[in-house]
Structures are given as C-alpha cells and as structure tokens.
Image (cartoon, rainbow, N blue to C red; front, side, top):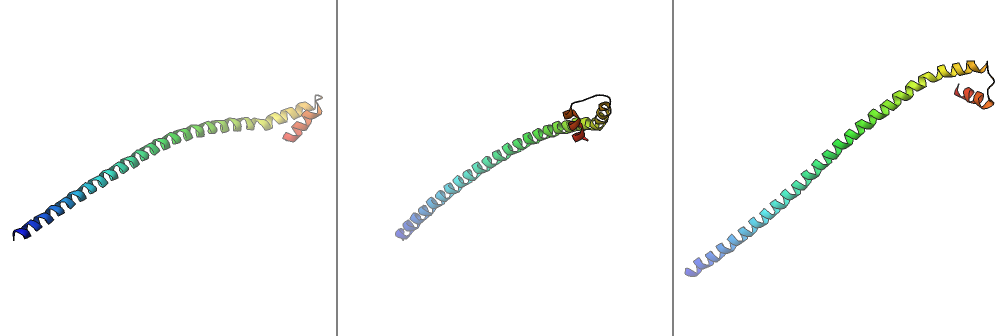
Amino acid sequence: MFDQIHNFQIRIDEMEHLIREGEDKARKQHVQCLEEEINYLTQIVQLEERLEEHEHITKHWKMCFSKLAALANGEIEDVPRMLREADVSLTFRTVPKEVETFLDHCK
C-alpha cells in the first residue's frame, strides 16, 4: 500500500511539473502575443501619422495648383482681347513676318 501511495505521489509530482511547464509556456506565448500586438499598434500609429502628414501635403499642393490654374485661366481670358488689339494694330504698322505668323497661329 505504501508503494502505491508513493507511486501516486510521484505521478502527482510529475503532473504538477507538467502543469507548471505548460503554464510557463502559455505565459511566454501570451507575452510574445502582447509584444507583437504592441508592435502592430505602434506601426498603425506611425502609418496614421504618415497618412495625416501626406493628407496635409496633398491639401497644400491642391491649393497651390488651384491658385496656379486660376491665375492661368485669368491670363488666358485676356488673350483673345489682346490678340484682337494686336491684330488691329498690325494694319497701321509694318511688323516682321515672324510676328504676323505668330499672331495668325494664335488665332
């Protein structure tokens, strides 16, 4: 009977040891998962910051190009009037052939 109790105690000790090993392994895996999650969250925050920066840059360049387009459109609006005025002034002056060719091209 003493041998059976002793054998049970040995088996209980072995099982407790296996349980502790399993708990240690589970803790290590949990810590590893938490570290990976922290890494992913850090990457997400960095990507969100970069996205915000790029959105700011995009807004800036859109505004600059819009202003440039408005300036160009404003200047283009004056071209037909200026071309008519130049064409009318040609009748009163002698101009180089290249100027006439250019004005004809613009029409």
